[in-house]
Image (cartoon, rainbow, N blue to C red):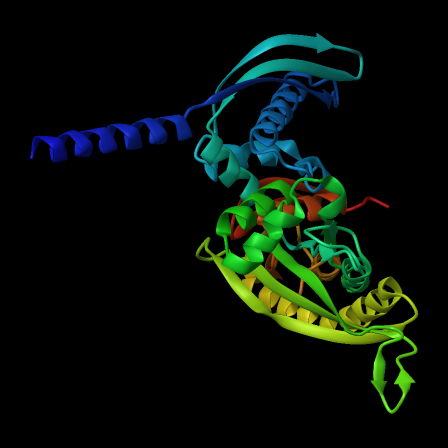
Length: 379
């Protein structure tokens, strides 16, 4: 009994130590700069601090794609850090501030809670951003030799880009290796998948592995005194399409399966390449269908209230601007200055897209509502 109690206490102690270590804050030195607008140095300093905080968050998570490439308004990002991440930056100290005629640069030490940092980054992921990693065993090689960039993955990426999706080719970043993806495909490991989502700010992943088999070798006897004039190669793909459900926060497998294609060529390498290209052409329509269904299923209704609209002409003008924003699927007018916008992404992106149209100032935003001030051109 004493021995059981001892091991129980030891187990509880180890669990407590692991939990404590997992939640331990990381303090990092970062710096950032912001432009001074209308001589407003305090506002520029706040924006620079927000940028520096986010740099600390990204450094803790290890993102490969910086949030700056998606989000320009860092005052809104500051709100995301405060609200959605539950205060992921636990504390910070401004170490230095350098004011120039046009900008303010700050150096800070920020203490970040790692699990909160991952949650904060995932909040900025794009539904229409697709991370693709499909390594292929090298034809004619033994052992686990992979081509991480290959004809199949490149053709698939090209086809998806044609449909205006944002594509992340994971292979050139060396953020993950082919063996880890092979294991994830075979075992359904969520750890590898979550890591990729955090690193590439994507809610949609296409992962897989390609194997090949020489069905008939060049010169092989095929009967009746005849020899095979070409190498006949069969290429097989095992893949998963995995996405984050924005309503539940859970990962879902949108599709999983195997596909194959065959090709003839003088060399094994050429035959495998031709088969992979055909495989990509055949697979793309099914993938596009699954991606389209996912985005449609995650589209939400956002209430957009625009202050400063006083006539029908302006209503029509603003409605047209909203409809022209990428990934806005519908705009419904409720009353003067009030619209319902169908949008599949984080409301933060919608706010920034509207702001980029000019004449708009973001007053307030939440996951399902936006309030803006609109100043019509005087021309």
